[in-house]
Length: 322
Image (spheres, rainbow, N blue to C red):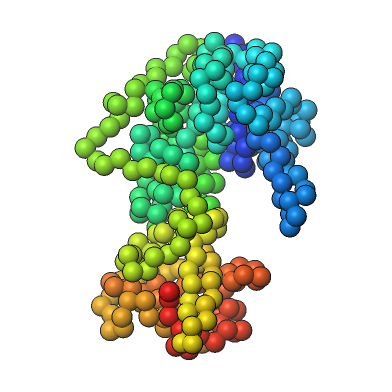
């Protein structure tokens, strides 16, 4: 019975492909897929690129809807014509009530955090940036406010000391896929027990996960300790990537992305912001409580590279961080 219900699946990035693939491969009745419109890419924005979810759906002959506006009457008519019993949302966008209230069994979302913690668009990044040791996934029924609906299932997942956002993303993608299927089975069988998020609130402060912009990714060395800088960089690696600007003694600037570092906590004899290098294999930033050694970087027009390769072609004597 669980696999007979009609499911409309909504998602866009790679994170949303794995649950869709499992649903189809295990025989669930996915009657349509909703994803973002094709994105203009290329130097002149003259090439349209389909989302990863659309690419997978079209390769497997699933009907695909790509609304510009979710309240568009033509889209709503198409969506209604699919006669979904349940809608499943994984990494899509905020839905208006006219969409999420349409199916008889409702609409649920998979969120890559342990709600009510890390509500927002970038939960994986912010959990790592904040130095969390644990995260997880949550399925919940959609409601009027973003990420606030009644919780269906949660599963926890460790964040290891050396994890990047990519590592945690991949781990949660696998975990989330299992939770999506379990949630569908519970709803279809009438056995779900949705719990208001208020019951999950403790005395611990609530952290949020707002959308990340380029300016968010600038490393503000003066505001960070060595461990905080380390967490900030790995929380944005490999995408969108933390970045910093180096300044030469004569005022020239060099902007670079930083992907991998090591940190050391120890008393410092140099002022915070000092750049130390042997010109061969070590490039280190002095912070108030320690040092951060850069291990992988990227400058404009170049590929991501080990710091040894970067130093082979760049002299940084007397440079500092901006």
